[in-house]
Length: 103
Image (cartoon, rainbow, N blue to C red):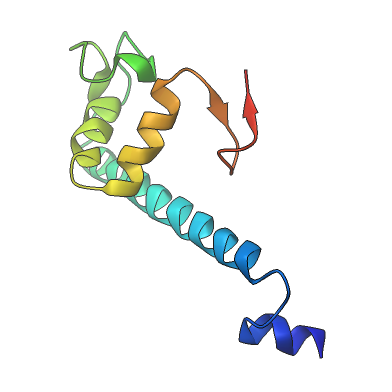
């Protein structure tokens, strides 16, 4: 009975279930974009690193390296990746949720 309610989206925690699905989808899209960037650089046999590896300096420094520069470029066209970068440019580390911020 409980499993059927959960599968049908009729549980008492439907809002929480919907929020979890949205967050899951967000992370899936971010991960897909990052994997695409990694695959592109690997196929080109390109170096990933630069001399400036701070996420907060992406787009400000030409020393960020190919990986971070491509992440920055793709984020202009990929909304979930853009949101993810904005969260991390603030200087806080997040783990799977915007509410679990470690300072």
